[in-house]
Image 1 (cartoon, each protein chain N blue to C red):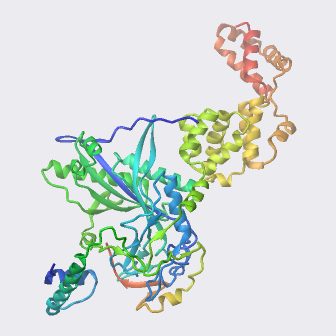
Image 2: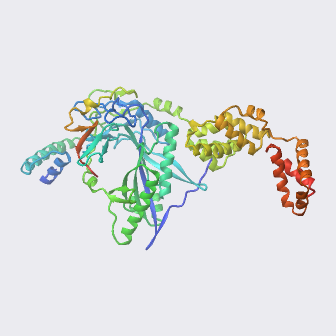
Image 3: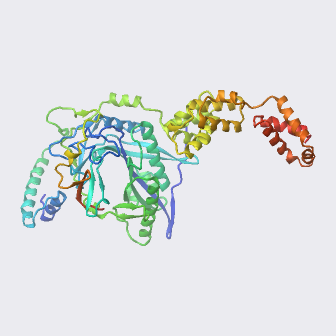
Length: 503
Length: 95
């Protein structure tokens, strides 16, 4: 297998009035665990249900109800940890994080502060041009999601839906290893890709499947390296946490705004105060959430309703044995086995369904040609109609046959595009259609020669002009292609025209 | 460690329990005596003793990932002081 090595990308630098500044970013990503039922109840996790219909009494915080952990959620967290090459803790425990909010009827969130189920791991985030950032994962813990409050249905009341209350989340905490807004978005994208490969999180950001809290601070060039050498945070600036963002674009815009806000304060001789902020996409600014600060005393303590979570190494090993090929490995294999470029391999491995489709097309065929057809023709066409790969009217087998016909020299690239369009709109077997509709490329030089002779004989005036100006030979090639319905081998035509005109 | 009146007021606020000012000194004194007892426990040397999480040696009970509950909107909302269109209706909370 190809061993991919990358250089570290350059950190983002913002020029201030008093010199350059660099950004230091750490993320807490909340990923909804893909399971049928909630973390501690048997209620459904399905999105978009009638309000308060996916609610068990334990989710509603009814007195006397006790949580019972969903083993499926534990397995998914372990699977995610393994996918991020992280340490799995066979012993973990749940704690209560106490706060009051109408969408949290228990009055506390069950989380894992002291003993998370997953420990340190890492994620490689490619940034293009042969660069990638290795982001360290500090921990992943399991916790309950809160419900949803709707504030715009009534002027005086807020409406609360508890369907999401108690749904399992994985909170994936990174080290402050991210050095710019684009890296932050790419990191979230990479986590999403890995979890979609693993099947542990759907990663639908619009539905709130994946949300991120972003910690941002600024420092002078050189300070970050001192932190990395010593792991001493005093070399870094004071950070602010921007809460709850569910769009890659907003994450980038919020970081950019927040960094500039902090730089302005520091250059004015002020001090950044550590606080929680909210990003407002309409105004493109962050603002302080003072109310949240006030309530920031969570009084964590071990949840007395839940024994520690003990899992067995053999169970973890079983999960490890069932892991699919992960994006980094798949990409390296595509580059090595099929000779694809870094870019093409990235595009094809972005989603596991795309990669599987490509592999079927490429099997036993020219990998690069297959990649071109999947990326340029198929993806282009699907995108035009807003279709997913699963909805493709052209099966991998059909596209594979088209690629095979091109490789064999049976059809030209141009005819292949027509054939693709026929398969896309009408369906059918490409090989049969090529035969039935006479689309085969003419490689028989005798037939091509006859067509060239005919065109030359019919256009004596053009022949004279072409002899004076050899560039006009193209016109003859075009005429011959037209006469043969585009089926003549263009290279053969070119050669014959040049020769016959004596150019 | 002793708890003063301000700390008692803060604890009450965090717990969303309304305590009148005149009741705070007594509350603070009670907190202090509870913490005094904890401090006494802290004197015990537990070096090398694993924290006990359960009286009986039990494994955390698990459930399978199967939907077995829910679809009881009316029952869930039954005790709510106000509910509309399937939602709990609460005094406006705006961040």
